Length: 417
Ligand code: ATP
Ligand code: MG
Image 1: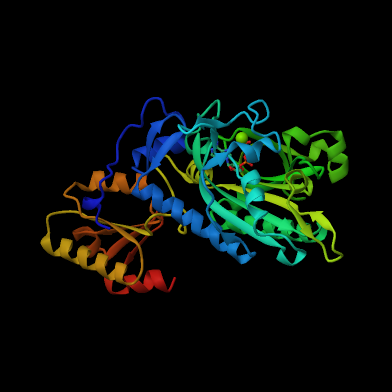
Image 2: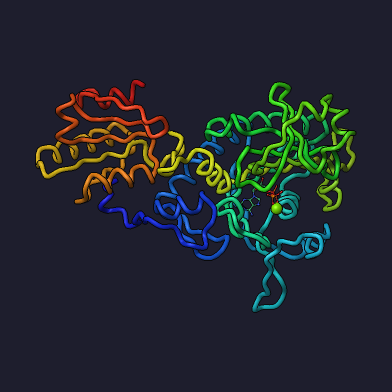
């Protein structure tokens, strides 16, 4: 893409009411636009980042048998009253509205009840199980405080997956597979080393649920970790009893500030029993199905990546997430140099490499600052100076490492590693 055609502009200052680093940088670099507190538009660059994050998660969910679908955002009151979760005292984040035709609707903050209701039309026998479904969707939550930019929105994108299994053993097997798939996701998202699977407050069925928590100063949670033993414990279940069960002492644990980037939850047969999702067992009995629920905060992850990887100059995207692999810059008034840059841009794109070509009529200072702020993994400068030094100048955004490469070898540099 030619940067002269990109309608979004970078800006020097973030809005004064925006205090988090992730929102400041994403707004300044033109990835998002703030509609109101906790509500952001994804501009073309931001939308590309979210699509890249979704693609990683999609591949990992498909690999364990997930089927992608999309449920509605408008939800019927009836499915939620059945489990008493329509009540604002039980669920304090509901957005609700009334229909002109009469009656109330809710805006989906979660989909456990609607999916269970929907599955009644499709699951009736043990032969129909297991079923694993997931979606990417805007969730609506009337959060009291929306202060951490993309990390706590009132409208945000979540990946939510639901598993329907015949018995405890099959359920547990998929639960473990999901844990591994989540770990692969966070590794590929560039935050694997800082992300811990954490013992957290139990669900309806099990003593503990699991959260995925990433060390992050802007996070709202605190957990206790032991890196060697690979143990992490959420604040809410941190007590002598838990420590004993997990075989650690308080002295071996380090307290860190984290953001919850994922949550997996075992409902056992409770939800399906409450909602009457029953199947016929092999013995001909009507039995409730085991439900698991597995979330990843897609836009929160985007915020955490910015928070954790950015430096004082701007955003630093991991390669798999960046909207463009290369930010190609050219300066000066030399026609030939500009033409060479333009032809490299076409060659790289033809080779399937995503390039943002800064073809704007601006000085080096501004172009370099924008490249640093926007955070593409590789910056390539084509200029008279780079030609004198032996070709084009490649700088890795994450490390600042510089190399000069013969333009004839540029495609090979990116395709052959
Ligand atoms: P939190 O404790 O942070 O409010 P939660 O327990 O309410 O999270 P879940 O209902 O399990 O979260 O949602 C699944 C995932 O969605 C969370 O792990 C988190 O990554 C993300 N998430 C939850 N609330 C928000 C929000 N308001 N904005 C952005 N992402 C969110
Ligand atoms: Mg919440």
